[in-house]
Length: 123
Image (tube, rainbow, N blue to C red; front, side, top):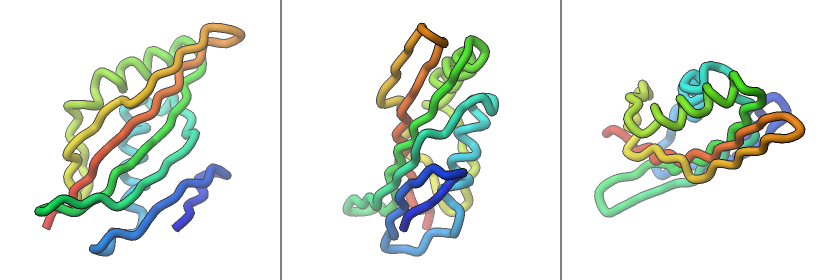
């Protein structure tokens, strides 16, 4: 399934168990809150994930932070993410990591980050 967030397209595959509509939007909203609302969403994608005992989805979220204040918010997000308790009914965030960080100083300070999150279905 393809999602359009303010003109930004992202994919959303169907898992074995139906997910609530907008579940990925709740995740995205909480990630953006960690960035104090100063992030620009570049892209989001998810794909089904399964092990012998669990099912879920793996999410990739790319964000950009422009300007000194926004970069400070990005640095806080990076520090908070691994231990943050997400509130996602029916799902548990089993892993949340920063996969990539790119920092550009000129012409305007800009930090882009790629986050990877593993959500497990809470059955």
